Length: 215
Ligand SMILES: Cc1cc2nc3c(=O)[nH]c(=O)nc-3n(C[C@H](O)[C@H](O)[C@H](O)COP(=O)(O)O)c2cc1C
Image 1 (tube, helix red, strand yellow):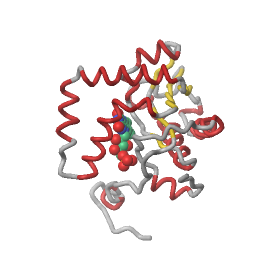
Image 2 (cartoon, helix red, strand yellow):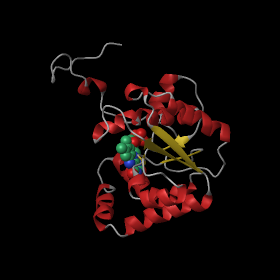
Image 3 (cartoon, protein in one colour):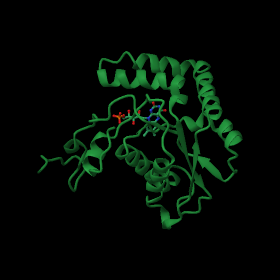
Image 4 (spheres, protein in one colour):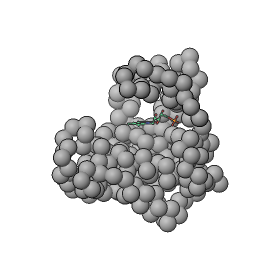
């Protein structure tokens, strides 16, 4: 099992996992992942969140089926995924193939976590900034899962599945799902990940002033 308690290894190898083994995830690990989420910062420490854990086979399958149906009915999305999966870049090709497959094999992840913004009353209640009080928690959970040897992928599938989530999980009106995170033991390898070099995205005093990194 690929566990680690080294924070740097965790950061450098956490990546999108889109294939899972059938092994169940022990409940104590689910608690740890979610508790890691609750350690994140939020505006004025309001902690405007709730986390729905879905292990029920029928509910996971119903959500997965709805997403698959949605994809079948969305020619634009299908074409975009198909075109980009022909990309010259191998990493992009693999990622898009995996993303396409995820529409059909989502339910093979034994756990879904649905982070919800709940009763937002921070100084930034609307729009993009409202997410700033919960996406830190989401990232904490992805990292904690990686450290525990569990594979996750951040998705925004909750948008396409919101109705069914509301019905099946009895979400109150003042809870807004902000992600759908499938989780399980990975049937794929963790990172390293491919990212823009840090030197190219770091601007010293003035935007555009880049420099060589110092180790
Ligand atoms: C806001 C957001 C939405 C995402 N939505 C999806 C998604 O719907 N489906 C999917 O397969 N991956 C999704 N991802 C995962 C990204 O594709 C992944 O993080 C990115 O390609 C980097 O992958 P890597 O960590 O394996 O290098 C999403 C990531 C983010 C941050």
